[in-house]
Image 1 (spheres, rainbow, N blue to C red):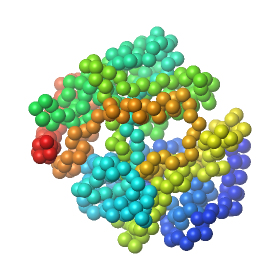
Image 2 (image 1 turned 180 degrees about the horizontal axis):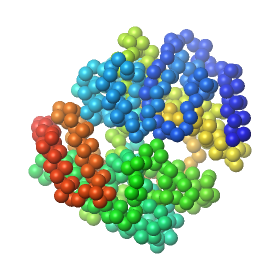
Image 3 (image 1 turned 180 degrees about the vertical axis):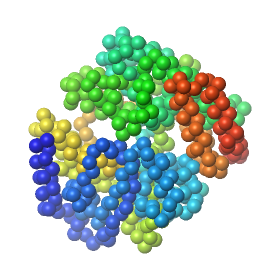
Length: 508
């Protein structure tokens, strides 16, 4: 801590002499009130006034002073609902996590967000935003107009990662090559009994989605052989996935308290010594970061990883399906009507800068020499060269300063940050994004319109998800689960299906 304190003081003092060329440019200086989801709510946030070098750099480059309201990711959806319901108290810029969910569509239609279409496609004034993917912009459009800038994400990110050393102790020495072998792996580890198998938390959509889609279920909605749209939860493969999770839970393979674990604390069960859980169904980039954590904290060999990444497993029908963790985007950054029309061009200029090489680097990595360093091998590190033994202290400061600042990052034409040194798993992951994008399935109703879904889809779908959680935990039987499904139909689901069907039939 003494070394860390010394570093903090040195950084704050250094800020008094920071000089960036952009500071000399003529530009409008503004304060921007921003609301962002926070994945590091257990860490202290260093503000601009307290000497945050990243915010200082952003201010020197752009003239923008960021005033950030942080909301824990697990509570962000609820906070969003309360925020958009009170237009007089809205931030000027906010992340909307669901690009086509009911609250996004209804808020856009109500006029609470600025229509940014003409700004985004103005390549002369906003070249970085205009360089984004047209198809992804189309995916987030509401009534053909853009009310936000998408936050770019890779398609084939979702999969499984697990500790091979624990699998080997349970007698499984080979990586699963199909869904049936994956099930065998899970129950073998559960039977061994010294750690939970699948690490789960309050965010269940990913675990349930990856499991059921892998088994062969559609994503959110399916279309049968007669062209009829139906909810994914009524597919027999979806039920097969739920039954697997229920059986694994009953076998002691899932923490019975998983619904009390916030998503910001999701890593804790695996990143403990010894681990409390040894597998996760999630974004695979977290898997290679887990391996790197093990190298730092338990001396794992980087040349022989004890974390394995798995995706593209054939199911019982021989088909490969990957859950779409996103549609090329994970939410969007919206500008609310709290911004005056006169101020809007300056705000858009700032968002354009955020997707430049300088802006992307600042939001994702921070400032060179303060929160990351380029070593002689040309790669980016979170500690100075020669400080390998003390690198955890620098990483702590980086996390404390940056918090979840990358949540403002849009990366509309890729992550332009300096590259980190590659590893075996990072290389595997990068190749996976290329090789397995072909297996990512889509929601056939994604771009179709359903006014009923806009009005009540989020509410009745949440009720269904809650029932599925209760089913996995053995607190609801199959009859009870099907009763909730029947309620979904009666409380608006049938109208949603009819409206989607009408729109689908008109297209096909």
